[in-house]
Amino acid sequence: MQKVLFFVAGLVLVSCARQEPPLVYGVENSGNPVTVTCAPFEELAAQPELPNPFMFANGKAVKKFQQWESRRQEILSLIQQYEVGTKPETSKDCITAEILPWQEPVTPRPVWIGFDGKPFHSPYEDMHPDTLVVTIVENGETLAIHCPVYYPEGDGPFPAVIGIGQGAGSLSPGIFRSRNIAMIGYPFQEVMSHTQTRGNEPINRLYPDLEYIGAYSAWPWGISRVIDALEILGESSKVDLSHLAVTGCSFAGKMALFAGAFDERIALTIAQEPGGGGVATWRFSETLGEVERVKNTNYSWFIEDMKRFSDCVEKLPVDHHELCALVCPRALLVFGNPDYPWLADESGYVSCSAARKVWEKFGIADRMGYSFQDKHGHCALPESQYPELEAFIDRFLLDRPVETICTKAPMFSTDLAPWMSWAAD
Image (cartoon, rainbow, N blue to C red; front, top):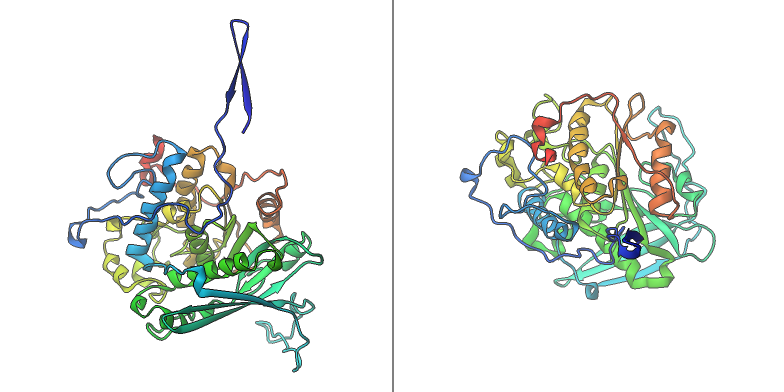
C-alpha cells in the first residue's frame, strides 16, 4: 500500500491509497458459497448478449472489489448448477499424503514414438521424478492419485506448476526447469477418464450421489486434492504454496481453466488452446458454424441437463467470459490457435475481451492476458509466444517486476459492442 501526499494551505496531508487485491489466497474458496435460484427452464429469459458479470442476481451492481467475492460466488453457483455439476467438498481429514523418492525402473524405459512413427527423445526422459501419492478416503472407499514431481536441485521451497498429463502440460519443461520451478504431473484419468462412463469412474466410488457431474467438476476436484496434499506435507513438500500455477492444452486447457476458476490457491492459470467449452463463449460460438457448441460438445465433460440449451443458448444464465472472470483477481493467461476452426477462437477472443473488463475494473488488467497466434501445430506453443508465457511465469511465480500487458489477437476485428453493452458503463 502506497502513501500519497496532498498539499493543502501549507499543510501536508498523508492519505493511504487503496490496497491492491490479493495475488492469491490461502484457501480453496475464500467466500461464502451461495446458491442462485433461477426461474424454471421454461421461464428463463433470453439474453442474446453476454451476461453482465458485474450484476448480482438481485439486480444490484458490483461497485468495488470488496463486493466481487460475493458476485464470484453467484457465478460459481451458476456454472456448477447449469454446466458441470457440484464440485465435491472434501475435508483434509480424509486425505493422506506422502512423497516417494525416485527409483531406477526395473524394466527398460519405453521408447517414445512420434506421430510420424519415428522414435524421439522425450524432454522428461533424463529427469528423475519423485512421486506424490494423494490418498482420499470417503464413504469407506479409497481413491489414490500418483503425481510425478520434478524438483529442481536444492531444498526449496520452489514455485510449482501443475501440468495436466505431465509436468508442464503441453508447454516446454525447459522454461520451468531453467527458472528452478518444480513441475507436478496430474494424472487426471485416476479421477475420471477422458470420456467417462457415468457411475463407473474412480470418483464415483467416493461420491455415488454425484454420478451426474461432468468431468470439469471432477478433474478440478482432483487438482484441489493435490494442493491439499501439498499443504498437509508442509515444508517436506518443498513447494512454495503461494506460487502455484496450473496448465493444460485443448481439453486439458479447459481443465486448467476450470481448476483455476474453482480454486483460489492457484496463483497463475495458463489455458492453452482451450477452445469451445473452455474460454469460448457459448453464445458467440453459435454464430460461427461447425465449432464446438452446446449442441455438439462432449457430454461426458458436462452435465446431461445442459443439453436443454442446445437450441436456446441465449437462455443460459451464465457464459464462459464469467468462467474466466472467476480467476480474478489472480492471474490468467490464455493462448489461442486460430488455424484450428474447431477451437472457435474468435469466440475465445470475444470472451477474453469481455472477461478482462473485470480485471480492468479493479485496476489490475495486467493480471489477465491473451495471445492468439496462427501458423503452428495444435498444442505446440511457438517460440513467438514464449515472451508472454515467460513474463507471466516470471511475475506471478517468481515475483519479478516484468511487464505483463498482453492482448494479442491481430486476426480478429470483431465488433464487441453488441455482445457486451454493459462494458460501456
